[in-house]
Length: 167
Image (tube, one colour):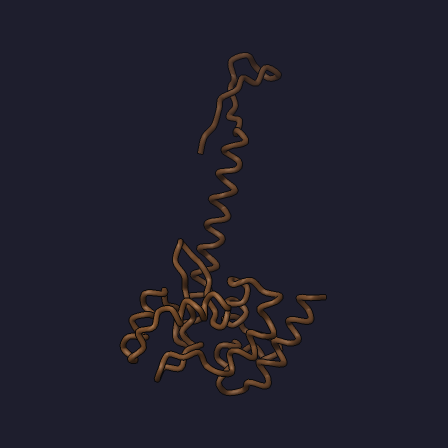
């Protein structure tokens, strides 16, 4: 943090008080924002643990290879077309693992229906957070946990939340 000492003549010619420059204030806001993003990431990381966790692209590619899929371009296409959830943190792309079929690493078919409801109103972070957080429409269960067991309820929750977001 950068401070400049400025004489405070109103109280005493010998007393100096620190004054923050605009650059210092901007730096402090930037730091606070970074801490907030880091905190949100850790919260999301913890939320996704129950449903399979989060993985960076290289880790997902390694899972692809273990399942006989070496087509990295397919994963890139899914990410670019928002057919799978992904978000950026610390210059890395992260993907929640609940969204992949563990037998062949394809996106779970029911995911597409929910994404179709929400991708127009939520950005990547918001969408990943939506799946990770307890949802009142799902009796405080997370959409990630409920996707495989109660797709109609998750679809209804996504429609209700899309309606609210558009409101």
